[in-house]
Amino acid sequence: MEKVPMLAEGYEMLTADLKALRKERPLIVDAIEEARAHGDLSENAEYHAAKERQGQVEAQISEIEDRVSRAQIIDPTTLSGDRIVFGATVTVLDEDDKPCRYQIVGQAESDAKKGRISYDSPLGRALIGKSVGDEVEVTVPSGERFYLVEKIEFI
Image 1: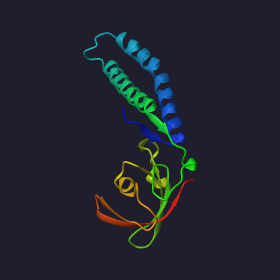
Image 2: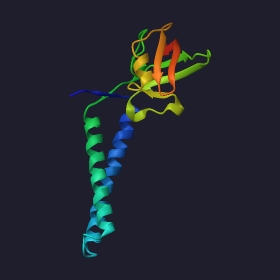
Image 3: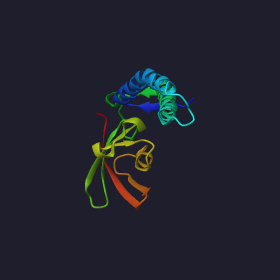
Image 4: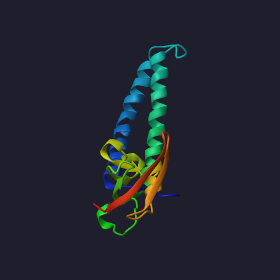
């Protein structure tokens, strides 16, 4: 079983989502029971919507439980080295020598607007293992992008 790396805040976010979904379970059961009371189930839109929502919630719960059970929580402040690894904060220069700063994080906590990219994203995969001074070529939907690794921090 493959471990899923994540920061502590990503783990907390997943467990909060799991808790909220588990709280929703009895509400869905109540909605199903109420819809059943309306009679004929073949033409009961409320019943079908509640059953569909129940399926969605159960699938989400299973997925999150799986990720939580395989979680490998990483604290970037305990890391060091001269290579980019999960949790590292990296400053790269783009093709216009404009600095961009990214933290390599798990899928659950990635947010490009906040400079947090998944280790599984094209740029994240390209950066892992690189050192200061290395050039990185990334294929993205808009074409090829080139970056120069300027700084690696573990904060």
